[in-house]
Length: 498
Image 1: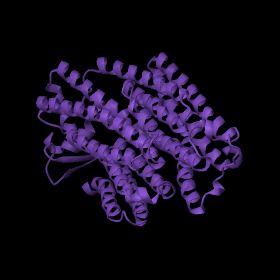
Image 2: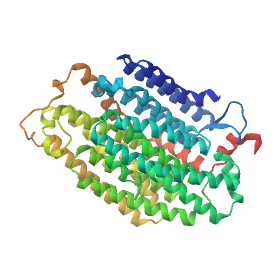
Image 3: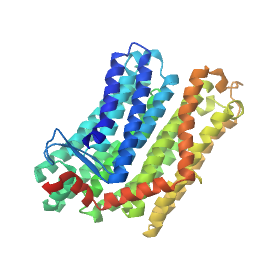
Image 4: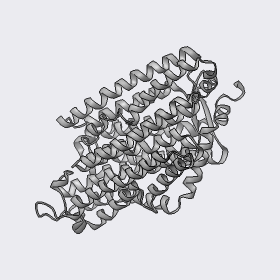
C-alpha cells in the first residue's frame, strides 16, 4: 500500500524533471498540466483509500518504524494533499495565460512542480526531520519562483521572505536537536510515546520553539511581516499558489505537533495559542483595511484568516478542530482564487492599485460575478463555504464559554466585508480613472479560456462546498477525532513495534 503514499510525491518530481529538460520549449506548460492532472488523480485515490480503510502508513525502503522514513496519511493529510492537487491543477491551467515564454525558459514549470512536491511531502511525512527536509524543498522552490524575472521589487521581497524563513529554520532545527537528545527518536508516532518520559518543563520550552518556528511559516502574529512584503511581487500564478498553500503547511504542522507530540501542557500552550489567534485575526484584518493595492489587501487577509485556523487548535475541542480542518480546505481554495482574479483584473485593467483601475462591473460582468463568490465566502456569507467554516469555529468558542474570542471572530468577519467592498467599489464599481472599458473580450480567446476555466472551477467548488457542506464536514469531523485521539495513528505507524 506504500505506493498510494509515494505516488502523490513522485508525480510532481517527475513532472519537474521533464519540465526542466523541456524548458526551452512551450511544451513545458503542458507537462505541468498533465503532471497536475496525474497528481490530482493520485490524491483522489489516496483520499478514497484513507476514507475506506482508515489511516494509511508506509515505511520507505522496507526499514521498520521508527528507524526508516515513514509516510502517513490520515484524513487531515489526505485532505490537504487533495486540495493541494486541486490548486496545483487550477494554477497550472491559469499559467497558460499568465506565464510568458521568458519565465518558462528560466525554469518556472520545474520550480512550480518542485514546490507542489515539497508541499505534498510535508503533508505526508511521519518523521520530524523529513518535515524539515520538505520545508527546505519548499523554501528553495518558492524563493526561486519569488525572484524569477529579477525585478528589483521581487528581489527585495525575496530577501525579506528568505531572511525570516531562515530564522524559522534555525529555530526548527534547534528544537529537533533538543527533542532528539531527550527522546532518541524523530518519528512523530514514536515521539508521541517517548515524550511521556521527558521532563515536562523542558518539553514545554521545546514546544514553544516549535510554536515559533511553525508560527513563522504560518505567518501568525507577530511573525507575519515577511508575507505582505513579498506576496505582491511575483507573477500572479506564483502569488496564488503561495497564498493558497505555503502558510497552510505551517498551520498543518502546528496542528499535527500540538495534537500528537506536544499535548502534555495544555494549560500553558492553549492560552498562548488563543492570544496568538486573536491578535493574528485583528492585525491581519486591520492591515488589509489600510492597504490600497489589490494584492496587498489579499496578502494581509491571509494573515487574518490564519488566526481562525489557529483558533480551532487553541480551543482543542472536537468541533473546534473539525472547524480548523474545514477552514483550512475552504481557505486554500478561496484565497488562491482571489489572487487569480487579481491577476485578470491587472491584465485587463492595467494595475492592481485601487486608484488606477475600475469599471470592471460594467465591462467585465462575468469577472465581477466570479469575484463575488470567493470574496463573499472569505467574509463568511451564507451559503458559501466560508460561512460554514466560521460558524463551526464561532459555535465551538461559544460552547466553551469563550465569548470574547467569538466576538473577535465575528468583528473580524465584518471588517473582512469592509475590505472586500473596498476592492469591489474601486476595481469593479467606479469607472476607470482613464475612461477605459477593460473587458475580457480584449484577451486572446485561448488566454480567456485559461483564465475562466481556473477561476470558474475554483468558484464552482466554493459554491458546491457551501451548498452541500455535509461531506466535507463529516470528513473534517473524522479528521478531528483522529487528531484528538492519536492512538490509531500511532498503531498504524508503529504496528507491532509498539
